[in-house]
Length: 312
Image (cartoon, rainbow, N blue to C red; front, side):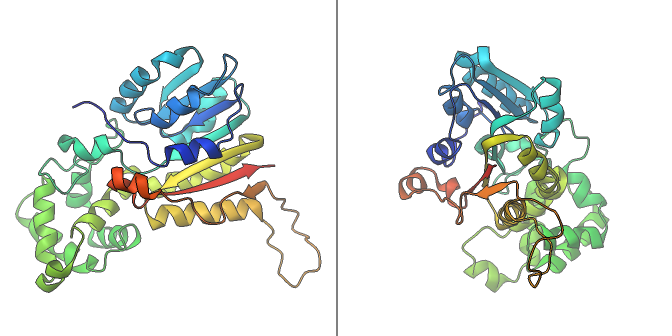
């Protein structure tokens, strides 16, 4: 299927990047190139855009979408955790802006064979980078009870984690769990009927989120990367990060605050003696949320939050 994705908080993100026509910008989650296209069209011939994505389908779609600005666009297939290595290989020290649009693209959700969605029966995959030898199937069938409980509690905040894991362990004794449909059935069996009846959301949502985050190391990559990305910003440069669930947003909010005020001295100390200096300021004291109009036209934007940090 064709790669399609509606860029969330598009205007708000581009506005907050404070784009300089001759600046250097990095889109660490290129996707179909929606955000990058708006950045590229604002650049002069001296400006530069580097787009990074680990999904081959995204790379192909973005290359086509950004073709009008190809002279000052460089596209690299990689994970944004490798951004510093990518910039070093291109001879770039500092950049004027960085964008991350986290989570799963509409294409990945809608392409049944990718195994991200719980609404279609498909192979248990969920890989954002299909070069990864491990899939969701491996996690479901090979992780221990404690490991499965950990990811459902930590990454899914799933209230019925123990019941779901118990059903998974029992099911896989009889046969290998192969598809998303099988997993959804197992989850439904684990959750009390009265809860299923009252629930407005899909019962598998939290479990699928947890498995996807574990498989793609999404939170670990985010934690490991924010400080390095801020260090690569030129003075006045900004990093804009769009999150889609509380776990991501909590990490971004906390790490932005730590970079603004890294001092570890006790509050009782009259002056700072730890020597840790601020790297910049948080622009968004509260996250920027989608407008009513965007929510009307793109229901998948409803959980999006944009946070912005500026380097000094």
